[in-house]
Image (cartoon, rainbow, N blue to C red; front, side):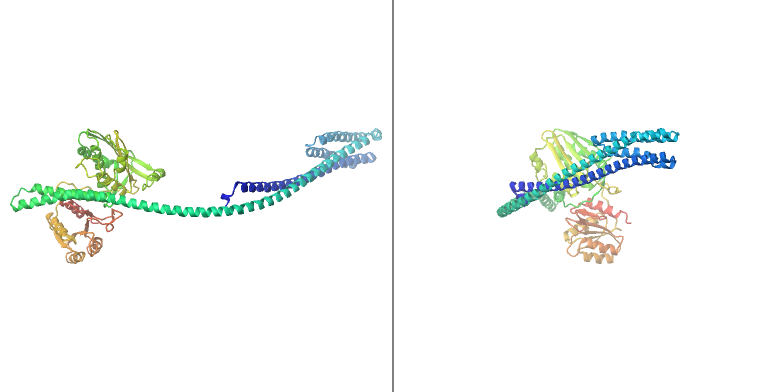
Length: 621
């Protein structure tokens, strides 16, 4: 409620607080004044006692002198000698205690002179008596010099004691006055505090009622605001749904357009092939090549769509980006042509990263080809590597980008550049600035999908007329360096032997037939099973099987479960999985499980031959 107190109430409370503080200060003054008065009393008593001690010492000295004069015995000098020894010490003590009082200092100086003269008079009479001149000593005593000095010293001491008593009375009077004023101040402060407290409570009660009314009005306004926000959110949701459907329509339209073109090529080529063969013509190779080209382009499109949706299966490995980029340099130069100057800038002490090498190669090639198209008259392409650290501020400014250490691969061109509006749409699927037939519009979206799926970040920097830089940030890899197998040469078709038995398991009959024929074409002995149950029965009857080639998604049993049961029966059995799309059988978080061999559909005979040979020739241990 203090937030809503009005200024007047605050002033009242501050004044009351000030009065309380004043009362506390007055109490403190009383306490310290009493302590000061007590100290003054102790000081006065101490000074008066020391002055009395000085007078006693003078009297003791005189008593000892008289006893010696009467008896001439040395033991009567003991009081005198003791008084002489203590006199200087007592005088100094009194001097230190009255050092702050000029009047007493002057009186002490007078007392010191009188006392010294008295002690000197006593010393002379004692010395004369000891020297056999007792008559002269008595004459000095009878002269009343010593009596006069003693009376004057006694009077000086009395004056000093009176001065101390006067100071004590004066301090006591001041203390009483201070105490009385403090009492009045405390009482007044408490009274005013009580009055102000009553006023503050009364005013606060009134304000509380006002605040309650304001809160009720605020709650009503808040309710209306929430209703307005709910209506706005509903409209925004409808707008987002509309935009989503528009994006899906654009994506579907692009896919349908490209697939229809590719299917038209495949169907048309196969129809022409069939008609020529029916007429007995043998010059049909170009139709076969055309159909294969259309099918391969369709397969490439599906891979790009999976990459865009971040659902393509990845096989990440530890990568030295410097060696990787250096190894690609010649390929990029051949791909781009002589009009493009390719440069590589490789950082020293570069960290390793963890990514799928084939997808990283595809991403860099995609960016290089885009850069070439942006430099129709030629130019310079620079591929640069470096270590990069993205801090919390960068992470907060870019959603889905965790702060941390990254390996940066940057592809920079000197081309025409992109306007800000183009950069905003660059990663949208099927968006392209190229002419008809010069691109699918999936290149950058595929690169972005791969980078995001790998836990990285991609950023475009561009200026019209000056060029474009695309920066790929891949997470730093902290694990041990992996020893990778040598890549199999793509030249030639690796063949099998009739002694190598392969079991093909596929629930789709046409796919089973085609896969089996492909294995036979490669020289393997092939057994076929249309279901996991049939496959397990065949394994029981044929322990010589070396490779299980199985689909992942099947109705009766998953390929992973089949493989587990099959390897339990045949521990040395090799397994190669295949599927067109699978979320969580042998692929988790879009990454192949460790030790899993996988060949995605669709595949060519060459790809099948290379993968099967690689699996069979791998270390069986």
